Amino acid sequence: MSENILLGITGSIASSKSEVLFQLLNKQNNVEIFSTNEGLKYVSQDFQNENTIYSSWDQLEGSPHIEYARWADKVIIYPATANFISKYAHGLADDLLLSTLLMFDKDIYIAPAMHEEMFMDKKIQENILNLSNKVTFCGPRFGNLDIGDQGIGRLVEPNELFDILYTKKDKVIVTSGPTSEYIDDVRVITNKSSGKQGRAIAIELMSQGYEVVYIHSKDIEPVAGVRNIIFETSEDLLKAMDSETNNLKHLFMVAAVSDFVIKKTKGKIDRSKGEASINLSPNIDIVKEYKLKNRDVNVISFSAQTNNDLNFEKIKSKDSDYLVINNLSDNYFGSDMNKVTIINKSEKIYESGDENKHLIAQKIIQNTII
Ligand SMILES: Cc1cc2nc3c(=O)[nH]c(=O)nc-3n(C[C@H](O)[C@H](O)[C@H](O)COP(=O)(O)O)c2cc1C
Image (cartoon, rainbow, N blue to C red; front, side, top):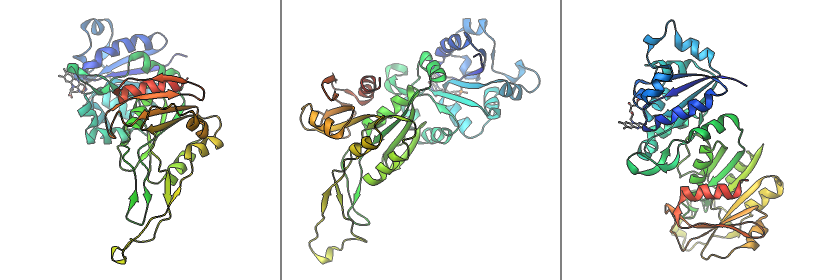
């Protein structure tokens, strides 16, 4: 089915990729191109000569922001700069593209591209989080950036964006970070999981167009652009997972769930009363419980170990479809690197080298979502 698509270009070093996206979209759709003034600097002269790109009010008559907003079925901002995202998040309308976007009330896709430091800036993260209830964010992902750097901020490729538009991808839950179990009203038992591997998986899945629900510990960073739910205790975590089972296809159970729960003491245990003890009882196996109730969900469990044993007993006891084993003796908690082995119930299916957690995330997804 042919659609009316407004392709918006902004001033990123990656903007020349919009020329490829335009060719893909234009095969079966009516595509109009709007650009910011800065965006024009990064698309080739040939592309500008061959196509009409609207970047100024003076090129059009009447009220083009109203007319084009009503004409378009979809608006795609590819790529979107930090500047553009922030202006849009705050309702600025000081050029043709921003004004049209503010007028537009149908499907909006935004593919950010910028250096990691810009992307991780608190204000940019906040702006993306605020926009994500009305916009589909496509990336950015980890990869090569400008001036030979690597980091999160790389634009998704044109064909990937095209797939996001026309192939509906599954709903996925990624859980991440440590649980905290309350000893009394002010103290907890927790663990040193950083949440980085889970976060990297959520970012990569979002870049690939999956509908991601990121259920993460209260004290670790959200993933801007996806649905975030916070947990504190293992009980909260299971409740959050249960609330998102509708249409769910895959669960990446990366959260480090406490093996023990505690009978919580009300108030604050008083030091002046002398020695105190806490009573630990074994926690339920959350993944096992979940799989029992949700047989059709593809469950990927994670096992932090101090050896490389292929733990077939564990994958069977958890009744998971895959187990990702990481040997803690190779990498400390909180490291950006990881080394994993993936097994299914009968065999080893993948072993990685020591690599950045984002690259490991890509390998885990490739080997477990089929
Ligand atoms: C060579 C070069 C590359 C740039 N690449 C990016 C980029 O990838 N992402 C970004 O957010 N800003 C980038 N900038 C900065 C933007 O171009 C600048 O913020 C500009 O004001 C954006 O304008 P616009 O959002 O109206 O298009 C780059 C600047 C230069 C000089």
